[in-house]
Length: 434
Ligand SMILES: Cc1ncc(COP(=O)(O)O)c(C=O)c1O
Image 1 (cartoon, helix red, strand yellow):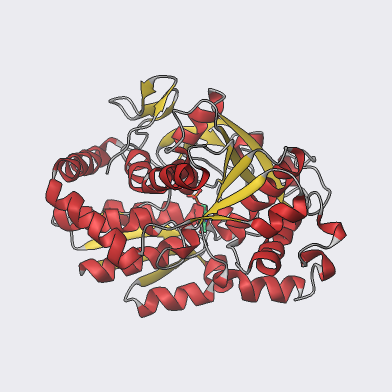
Image 2 (tube, protein in one colour):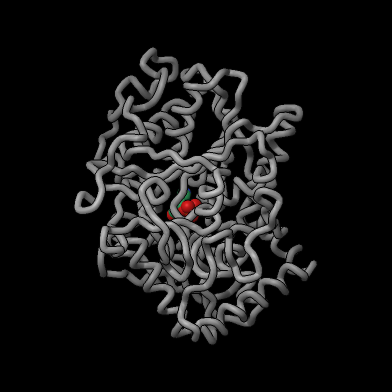
């Protein structure tokens, strides 16, 4: 079950929770005992064949794993370049990859004798996944969510409440994921005797990035095997994932980190009108939510406001392992605008019969652009991290059902090339622009 990634021959994180210069534990010393308790609990889970077997059974029965790898034949034909495949994490129970680490945290909480799970959520996918895992394992659940997201993602708020979770709206700053994270961690500090913090991504102080990466690595392990079986022994040339904190990206990358011939791509949200959340593209080293990482900052060092059409990508930081992989050159980073992502959202719906999450549509938009530049002998594997049911009302209200007109139809001549013609390296603006 656990998978420790190797990068340039080394295993990460080190004993202090560092991925190169990133990571560590930058929370106040009084948190040390709770994080040490978590590290010990996770070590016990790794060492227990019974618990690992239980997790495997939950992945199959409750989650519906393994999820398939699927060839996007229509879009690949339209693009006329490299072949695009998707790892169907949208087919997970509750509709996204988030449940991969939620069931892990719920199992861990039970094993550690905790009675409650606390977390933040952006798009609501992590919250719904955690609420389901908590219900299954008989745990209480408290989910902190920015007030703006509570409004935008009302269907997911209803699902969380139906599953028995308490949703705590957070009205501070941008009233989005960043503020929800801080609020959830405060609640954990207060309730740590009986609660476990089930963080929403591969972020935060050690050991959270390690635990989330390990629980998510099932995605990469499955995808690697499935890809080899489908192609008769070939690996993908490119592996693509959208990144906010990096949980879906690290999950998929972990199956290919040791394959130097596989190019790993991270896709960030370039937003619109100079407002974005492209952390690796425009950020600089800093400390956020208890870890040393890359952070989008104002000139004075304050965390910058962030924006994307995809709520789950509105985060000014990045997981420390993704930051290290970028710093060492193992992954490359590109950015996709709101318009490009919405174009891919419509295109996957109309051409393949799959409505993707807006977060995943960022990865797909980049994959389409990449495939158009590569020969048909190459293969691109994209993490389709979630399904788009949560986004349908919002997209139809803002863009209308005829947003793409004929461009969403398979085989239409205008389907060649990228979705908008706009470069990902456009100028998003800095400082007061944001
Ligand atoms: C479907 C989906 N994909 C991707 C993400 C981005 O998170 P991460 O970078 O942790 O995978 C989210 C976050 O809410 C999401 O809901």
